[in-house]
Amino acid sequence: MKITVTDALMAEDTEEIRNHLKANNRKFVGEILNKDIGVFALDDSGNKIAGLTGSTVGNWLSIDLLWVSEALRGEGVGSKLMKTAEQQAVASGCRFARVDTFSFQARPFYEKLGYQLQMTLQNYPLEHERYFLTKILTD
Image (cartoon, rainbow, N blue to C red; front, top):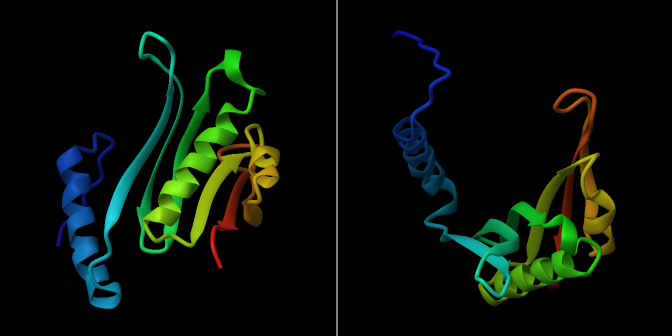
């Protein structure tokens, strides 16, 4: 066996490891449909002025990225994107949602939408905190 380290990770490397891990996980959870989700706000020219990306996996909606342009912050656009993603996830059979955010980002925003803190990672990435929050979408 030879151990190697690289800081030039190739997409093929990640895909190969992901495929091996998925094959192993199927033994325990079966074939779970993993679907990407994107919700976007567009200006009149079709440019993205806000957006959310994530995925649905089994019972869970995972929010990966949420961005709202500076000009639109505080106008409810982020809440609309989140609610749209949650509604789509429920329609796809999800019962729960998860998101993470940094201490300099949007924890109060997510809590206002009903997300509850589950865990805090201290000193991440340096002197900040990373919060992990969840929400029950349906009973």
